[in-house]
Image 1: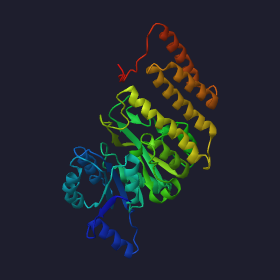
Image 2: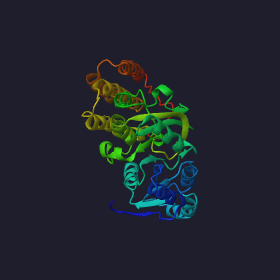
Image 3: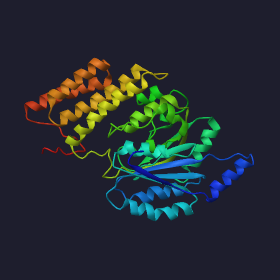
Image 4: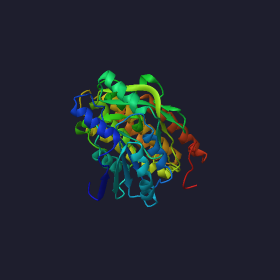
Length: 351
């Protein structure tokens, strides 16, 4: 990748030597799995994520750490971790690149994958020790080529993702259920056969937010999926997380990417087997509802109404949009008295 240098591990590691010997002798060889940890200015958190990979009960294992142009002491921390990584019989690969954002970092990591399977782990989250082992076992049992699991959420309204077993992805053509938001899996929960990248493609680097949703939509249309009904990874949502919006103005900026991810899903998936316009309209109603509510919180009643009308034209009389109409009416009445509803979790940057 342009502007990056990559340094990988060398021969002599116990598990890799054993795998080569088994291969020569015709014995079954366990697949190499690659863990990708993109990082940016989180030198203090990176060791926790890395050590959760080293604690995995599965071997052989490659660890790819992608430093996305950090300005803190991330490079120093990576160097300090290297002996620990090698001592755990894990092959280290370090990618240092110019800052390009989350999607760019993940793509650089995917291009450095040597394993038959790979998983992505954000630098502020971590995996439980049996994650890879349990997922590989489920893949081998079902013949699937990608596996999900429950994700523990340390913050937010929902204690885990997805909320129940029925919402975990299973089988082929889960794309429509995902697009309609009836099934899901956190990006850090997925273990994916590397060869699927040829059909799924890479993360869209024009998106700053909702890159997971766009990529998972393509994956769920292409993969034969299975799931482990266990909480095997943890999503911490730190204060610096991209998904954490602190002001309504910041949310407005993110909403532009929110609308764009909706269009990208249709652009990149409408030609795939099983595509459903109805499923996409169900997601679209959710997006228009969320973005219009944010405009109401900003006091921009006219813009919110215009977005509502666009949503109605595109999605018809969807339940979410019927409720949005009632909220618009309420906001209009409030405006007569100079009252503007406030977002329950945010402050208005203009206050």
